[in-house]
Image 1 (tube, rainbow, N blue to C red):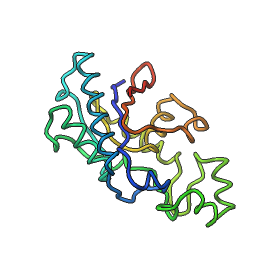
Image 2 (spheres, helix red, strand yellow):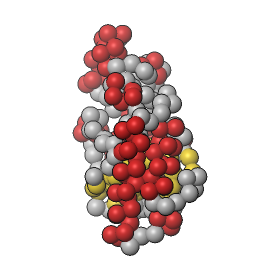
Image 3 (cartoon, rainbow, N blue to C red):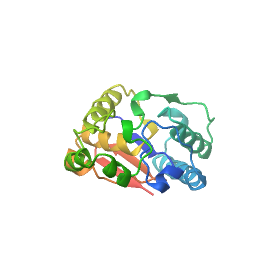
Length: 197
C-alpha cells in the first residue's frame, strides 16, 4: 500500500460562513494560508523523522484553487518548487449541485423533505444536481488504484471521507459526519490513518 500524506486545503471565507463549496473555486483566507504553511512544516518534520527526501515522493492536488494554493505553500515549506506537482480531477470536492454556496439552514429551508432524507443517509442520497458520497468513493478508489509511489495529496474534506471508506478505514455511517481538520497531515498507511497536528 502506498503511503499517502493527505492534507485538506486551508480555510476559506466560505468555511467560516458554513457554506458548501463543492466545485465553487473559493480562495484561501489569511488563516487558510497559515494552516497550509503549518501543514507543510508538519510534513517536513515527518520526512526528517523518517529519513525521507521530499523530492522523491509524488505530489498531486485537486484542481480547485484552494487546494492548489495550499499545495504551493506546502511545497514552499519543503523547499520545493511550487509547480512540481500534478492535478487530478478525481480529487475535486464532492459536488453539491444546487446547494453549493448555501448554508445548512438555507438548504433545509429550500427543500426540507430532501434535506431530512439526506440527513439520514448522507452517503447515498445526493443533493439536487450534485453527487453522492458513494460516487466520490468510487472515484477515490480509482485514484488510489492508480498510485505508483508514496504520495502527498492536497484535496478536500469530502474526498478524505470517501478515501477512508474506500480503504476500509471508516464505515459509510462513521465517515459521513467525520470532521476533517485543516492545517494537519493525515498519513494513510498499512496501519490505517494517523493524524499529525
